[in-house]
Amino acid sequence: MSELHPLLSPPESEAQLLSQARQLSGYTLGELAAMAGLVTPKDLKRDKGWIGVLLEIWLGASAGSKPEQDFAALGVELKTIPVDNLGRPLETTFVCVAPLTGNTGVTWETSHVRHKLKRVLWIPVEGERSIPLAERRVGSPLLWSPSEEEDQQLRLDWEELMDMIVLGHVERITARHGEVLQLRPKAANARALTEAIGAHGEPILTLPRGFYLKKNFTHALLERHFLFQAQ
Image (cartoon, rainbow, N blue to C red; front, side):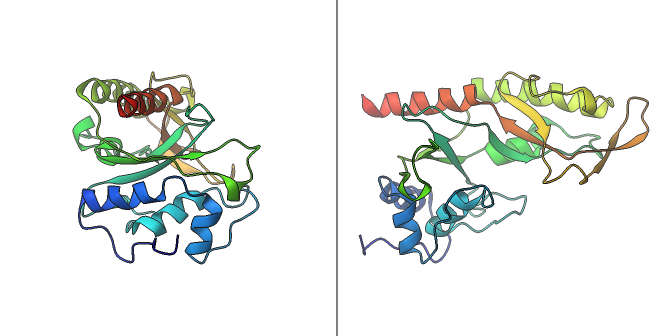
């Protein structure tokens, strides 16, 4: 156990990143935290991003909360994903904050969503609430890029949602819009408002929104990977 150490600098290749991620597989969050000199919180109520931060430390991630990918030099984004005992995602996956103004000329090819999802290191983590946080195990990693079909699914949803934002219908968007990508309020409290476009083109104040991958999308990509891996 003592041979495993967090990467002190960002990985220099995808191979190095994936090798380190594979070594974490099977360890509990408590074990990884202790080896990194961190205290494991009792739960995630006040530390929602704690698992992501812990794995960023182990993998030498560089970006923090910047708009670039977590491993900017490699163009790879890190996504931890809580799963149940059958490997199914337990929640949607945050991608990035949605721009509600200044969207003239933005296309799917130049969008933040596509940039963030171009290359993703998925790390499943046990997420059942019945398992104490420190005892939850880290799963086998997946380095993924969208297939043509996945890219098309994402593009169609993104274009529909962005059209609604640009046309002043942001307040009418619900989590049910989109087959694989959804837009939801993302704010620590209801007073954190941001500027958007209203139904008549006027500036309005509304809650910040974020793009999230729906569970059906992440479930399908994890299932394909692990079925292939088992063959």
